[in-house]
Image (cartoon, rainbow, N blue to C red; front, side, top):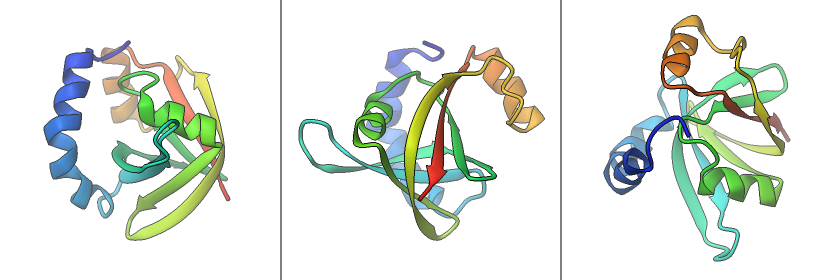
Amino acid sequence: MPLPRSVARFNRALTSHVARPMARHLPGFGVVVHVGRTTGRRYRTPVNVFTRPSGWKFALTYGETDWVRNVLEAGGGWLESRGRVARFVDPVLIEDASLRDFPPAVRWILRRIDVDQVLVVCQA
């Protein structure tokens, strides 16, 4: 796992609540809306998001977390980004050590923290 679970817990408890309202509007950020696997509850998780021709890519800085498992099991979710809401489907978890589809500065940071897992989704 690239970043420690303690960082993930801190971000879920504090940082996510602060970032969520802004993430929907800032370039390179978004909010993934997903449904809990066991609760059926709707969750909103701020993420870094990168466009690709037919959808989006998410670099998984914490590895396969709950939101990733929820999206995989549900077969999709919604992305709020740049003031828009879009449905996404066909999530695929891949290992991509090259990270070639990410901007150079982002790629440099991701390599420093040992990230090689990427979630790829298609716009519905």
